[in-house]
Image (tube, one colour):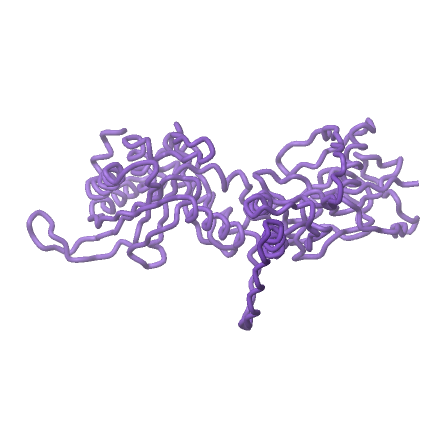
Length: 453
């Protein structure tokens, strides 16, 4: 008899606790090999193909396209036979005519899925483990069961619930005990809306316990009709991050107009000299890394819990990129060590991957400073929100011809507005102004950069 194994959505890393099914890559009855991708999911950071660690015949799929499932929830069941085993490739569990043997399917729990993965580790066969494509394969580690005594008169959280850190933090701030809630999400997952609905009732119980009358419920108000767009995936992640940035970071913005005529001429000369082309964004990035070398306190973040400023030795440069999935910020690692040519190539590679939704989560995290070129949208200026927890961001408006006093005479020059948003806890206006002025000087006179080369 074939052994049926359940494969659950693995830990996707980077704090991600759920994913949305974007596309199924296999059908029920199809034979799969070890590490063959079975489903494509969309997380808050990227599109990811999830490989199955078992070989055999797919006997069940759990979830439809568009469903959001938590980490640990079952994705597929696979029937393995003695002939195929975990690493085989034969038609296990199929009738002689090629049709799969009907296998009753059920909605498995995350706990049972984890047990199956743990059991395969000790089976002695070649297994993959719940890993993502490109992360390598190895036998999954044994999992320990944590046994917790049941508290009196409290309900245990559903076994399949993998509650997000954001929901836990909101519950903690509002004084809500998650063990007292029943989740409305998939497999009993407790969502943010569940916590927010519990707040009025909790406040009423607290008021009664303190000897006060429970507050009167507010009068119901009509909810206006309109299109409702779920805040999930990239849209939800951006909303949460921007809200947190505005809530936690006391930011300020300064700006200056700069004559970019000489910078454009320098780029034109570089590209006419032959060899790989250099983009304007790469030159601006090179200017940013040079400016951060002069003002290293801006390549930092604030550790609010430790009440410390953390200054970072390497510049991992994020840049805003508009994609069909929304605004994302890919990160160029060690940007301070790269040339303008190297930066040009890396910007191009990451932008193409972002537009195709193929960036790995690691390529969208870990930034220390952001370069935001909103000039591509035809606007001059902006006061952007910082990319939490970063301490600073340079914004670049459109470069357009304007009347400008050049060498004592009125002339038509290519002018750009530069804006600099910074965390006022990290530095004062003098440092921020010094950084922006240095950037503007490099834009107006690119030869200033030669001092740092």
